[in-house]
Length: 376
Image (tube, rainbow, N blue to C red; front, side, top):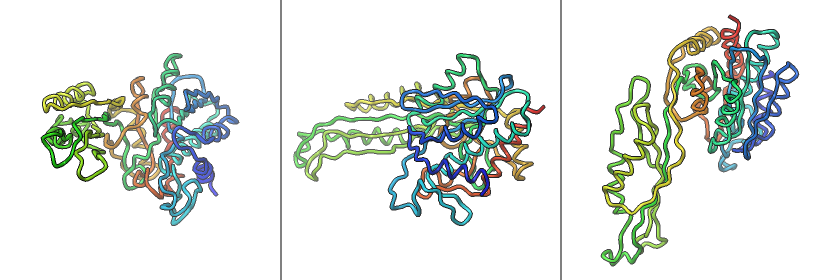
């Protein structure tokens, strides 16, 4: 069994549903510390964060990822236990196989192989891990980066090992992500007998014009780097428990994935203007917004594309599509940040999996990137 496959199996077998780490960070540190890497735990609340670094000089190349996973869902829907790594038809199955235990395993081994080959390398290489990426992301990378910044330990480049590929490993490099803004809305009405609508105030009817306007609004036109902002309701519920009762309350959850053409404050104000104009009795709880980020094409994007071309013979496309990532916390330091990882087709799904041949390719690619950046 290859070293990367064995390490992936070890990590998948450790249940680490957010904010749990399940001993994953300890396992990775145990692989790197004998080579001279210095491990520094940075816990915050219930979250485990770990910074592992080799070298003290600049420039600093940071790899970043998360050890936590989303819940597995109904266990009887899985073809095999989600926390028992299983190989079938050239794939490794298990919760976190793609998102992103294969990524952190490959990054750790790439760091190890680079240092084994170049023990006196210039600059520094490090691995930042958190168990709070799939959750609120309040006590994870955001906290660790703040602590590193406070002492002047700022990366020049950062590779986030998120699963960003579409069809096969390396076909996409994310050099940015859209922002994300979520809200929980409550619309109040007056409950009553459905046969006497004049004595009721139906919040479903009240909300319908606002729902239509919000879903049809063009929030911006996007730009050359980001598509236009999208608005989606993820839940709209209202139920008094009987067919002959007008409910007294409606609850709705929504999310906007927004471009750099707008900001969260503008979007909040425009949404509240619609709710006020349609004369709703409402409350809205805004969740903390995830800011968009973008790394312009430059040395890091060019090096990553060159490494993928040399290792696996693919021409990677730069993209900002998809959800959020912890890259948004690292980019404000001034570091160039990109995301390079395995295929994302099965992430968060039943029977999540990664192609086994991708594992070695990821290690070799991350190694090639490290050599190109530090051995100049």
